[in-house]
Image (cartoon, rainbow, N blue to C red; front, side):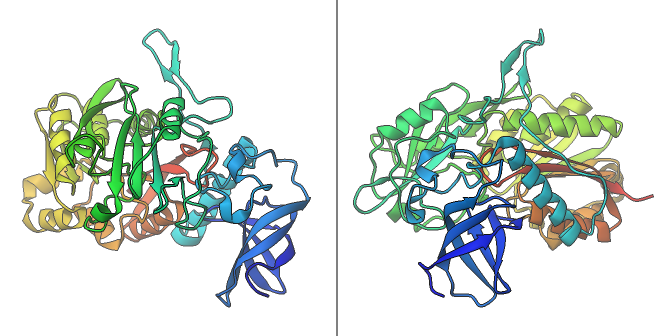
Length: 447
């Protein structure tokens, strides 16, 4: 069979990456826009590999009770698969089933790549933000839309503006952006720009910033953290670097954080609040923070989690934020000014750990052995060198904030080889209607 051919398939499972599993004459077929338990008619989109094919659903022959009209009409089944925008690959599934599928993917990854068969990990939604009197100040919408405060769109050579079609670099103009905040969706409808990428950013002050990234400038830039980054170096009507380098304010856990408009911050409007709350609660359950210890926040960005450690430990907390982006490190230094023992260092995490392991004296190693090392790596994970470097410092606890189940599981498997076992893994659905899920794992040495 060839790409473009239609084929009827029984969907048996979910796979990592937002696709679903079927088989045709023994060959695995990864199918988009389906649900386990359904029988669908699908168009083959890639038959180049002998080990598996890819396909997209065009008709549902036997529907799951969890199927609904797609939350993004532009991505529904009545649209040609080549024209469906990416970014909402679970948008045709009820929210409860979405979270059950994410839970299954996470559990399977932990077992397959991490060797973990422990307690069930439940995927729950974003935490509501409460005021001092208990009043709910912000919460997830009932249909889990309107949450993206950072959106990347693209402009092709003909001036068309929109997201890429799923699994392609083809621009698809759309009429709406249901996952984005209303203000970003409104700004997107009025957007014009040069060919390349354009990021729309809405920080805590509510005003949308437009950060273009023309193709000519993208070619000369390295990649950033690679995860939900809405960064770009240009803006119409301003200096080339001004739009990306404009300092804006974000808020989490009752604190304000300086960050560049083009810098890294969580895209869900409640994500930073939710993740810091999960980290803080987990560490309190372990007895809190030793205020005589040395703590590390690796891949630290602008100091979000370093501040969480500082809040738990008090004004004298020794915490070092390590980040490869100099601008983010500069902001982290400002954001951590309330703690006399806090500092921010610009370095690649693997090199920082190698240097620390080589140079640390007995007193510093003793402080690190009583401390917490938190890491929030990009989607690819931390990798063996970073895990080995952390384990060599023998911290009392490791907190791993992850946005990819497989990367998390692989790194947890490496930590387990060093004697660190997860005491708690909590997953949060901070990317509703997509296949992505965040998880926080707390590890300690096995007794």
